[in-house]
Length: 187
Image (cartoon, rainbow, N blue to C red):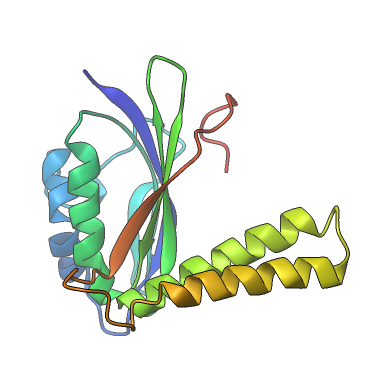
């Protein structure tokens, strides 16, 4: 069964990264959609650019919609893992699945040059989200108290600290609560 998915984000590359390297890294995704090159990976939505490599700005911009099956998530994870070592710093790629049941599923992929960079970027994102949400309801001291607690929690799970035998990855994904029904593809 096919499900519509939308992938959106920008991944910032190191100096000297070439299109061929990006296409090799994204090969699992490109093979999945039967595309030889980034330019061939067209979005179902005409107004969306798809997957665009900008050598001047050193960025891969993604705004792509497609009909996918169950194995797409694994292929996208593999592609993001391969892209991580080519990045200058961590960034976020959002993935939204629109199943026929109407209960949209939202995922965040954090892509970066190292597990530490990904971890720090995730911490910054969570802190900013909490700060934004709570500042409408609480004063600055209370918001700072909560963000300090969040920082402490992230520090406790820092990938720089030995955490058993689990291998570290430069990309991670986390499921976020399902989206409320709303218009699709709004950015």
